[in-house]
Every structure is written in C-alpha cells, then in structure tokens.
Length: 114
Length: 114
Image (cartoon, rainbow over all chains, first blue to last red; front, side):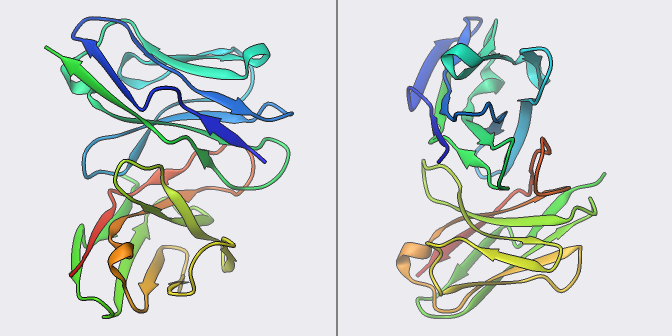
C-alpha cells in the first residue's frame, strides 16, 4: 500500500526566507507525485506534479520540487517566502502501475512571519 | 473558465436531517470524487464515479450515498447526519482514472450539524 509522510505538521518561516516542505513516499514503483495548496475555506489547488522526465519540477507561484528516487522524496521549495504563501500544503501520490486513488499526506501548515 | 463548482459553500443541517451537497463540472472529465476533510486533516476519499461506474471506499459509512445523473453533476447524500459528519466536503474531478492526470478540486462545502 502507498503511504505519504509529510514531516512537520507546522512550519514557520520569515518573509523572504527559504521555504522547505518535506514529503516522503513509500512505494516499490515510483508513483506520480503532486503538491497541492489549500487556502482557508477553499479547495485544493495544484502547485506542481512529477510524472516522468526531468526530476526538478517547477510549479506556480515560484514553487518547485525535486523527485529523488533514491530517497523516495519529493520536497517542495521556494527560495523566498511571501506572506501570501501562508496556507496548508498537501503532498499526494498516485500509483503509476495500478489503481486510481490519490494518497494524501497529512498536510503541512505554513506560517509566514513578517 | 472550465471549473468544478460546489453548492452551497456552507450548509447547516440538523442532527438526523437528510442533506444533499451538489457538485458540477465544466471540464467534461470522466471521473468525479467526493472527499471528506475534517479540521487539520488530509482529505479522505469517500467514493468516486468513473463515468456511471460507482466505486465506494471500504470504510465509507452507509450513511453516505452518491448519485451521478450525468457527466456534469454529482451529488453527495447524507441520509442521517451525525455530529461527527461535520466537515468540509470536497468534490474533485480527473480526466481518467489512471495515469498522471491530476485532480481538479472544487471550493468545498462546509457542513455544520446542529
């Protein structure tokens, strides 16, 4: 079975500082990987996804993530945090070889300190 | 713009009084999902439709039902809401069940049970 681990349920960074949100997955076959952002009382919005090809993926709002097969990780980064980045971030995986379900991590709440 | 629409955004019901949540999509996607999301938790998949094929998750209570009368619309029926059913309900769509297709989420309906 797939599982997704997001280390750190709460992360605080200063405005302008580096954002690093961690995601690890367990799967014998590399899955498709996604990062979603959720603002209060809203649905989830796709930030970026990795399917195949280049392991460094760029998304919206200046975010990027790198797929590292050897570490089974897909960490999300942004060089300089903005106040508008404060939100809940979910990592999700989808098996590449079978099944149809998305498996979500438990989420990381990002606080940006002025 | 193509999108996923949920109505209403906020729903208040009484304990035991049936309630229906609505989702529509203009994306013409084959798959529609219903998730339940409680505070500070990841979305939990309740069920999904692939075209007219209904797929229930094993741990979804019988109290939750769904209908998909056509490609565009999907409904979530809660037959006898309990206090524990108070949550955000998210509708999502994807073009197909397999592969690298991401899910597109609606803004959610926040259900309050009095």
